[in-house]
Length: 113
Image (cartoon, rainbow, N blue to C red; front, side, top):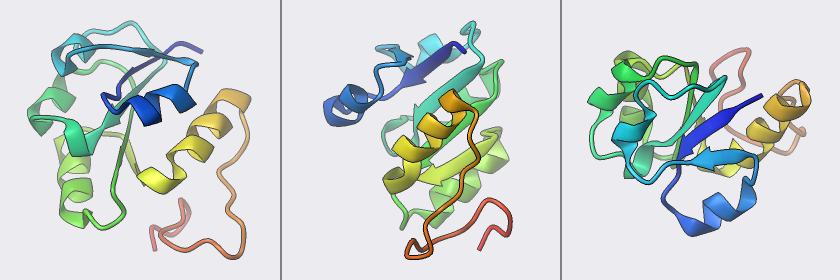
């Protein structure tokens, strides 16, 4: 699976070595990838999401509900909280389901709540 991402934060980038990182968000347009990962908190404009020709997984702070909703409306296929991104990405790479521990909070993929 080829994953391309715009993840400018060095700490986040260092966790995801399987992601081919681009320097500029505009480089995501037309990227040949099976999945595109986008740090929505650092994306200058959501308009770029419409130009991505691959499934898009965005992530942002769990308190940015408006940003999450706007990203989904702009064409992002899925948005997850930053705190779950490493696990979700690992699950995608291994083909595992996104199953959370009982002590985790926040929306579930099944219910959105």
